Length: 127
Image 1 (cartoon, one colour):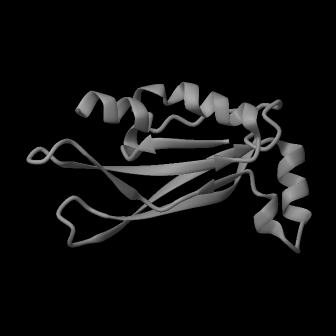
Image 2 (tube, one colour):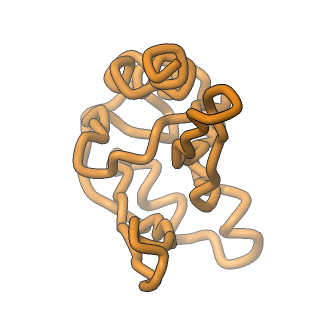
């Protein structure tokens, strides 16, 4: 399940259940997703880190995996892209990032938690 959010990283809300099985409560973090972007002035390259939670059993099975560990991860994050909105003289660029969840239930929870900054909603408000 893919979820596109307007890039307001301080407003991202991460549901605190396992991002791989979406059933067990949060135990620890295995990975950090780093999103790279240029700041608003366009001069500096910055990084933002997001961490997704795992339960104990999923975390142990993920740490035991040596080969193809990247495919076993629960979330993929794209780089920051921009979408142009507006008419001829009122064009704006809205930065956004896309999350690809392997577990659809966790993706729906993430989408519900961040419904106020979904890309479609932000684009419709800025027209």
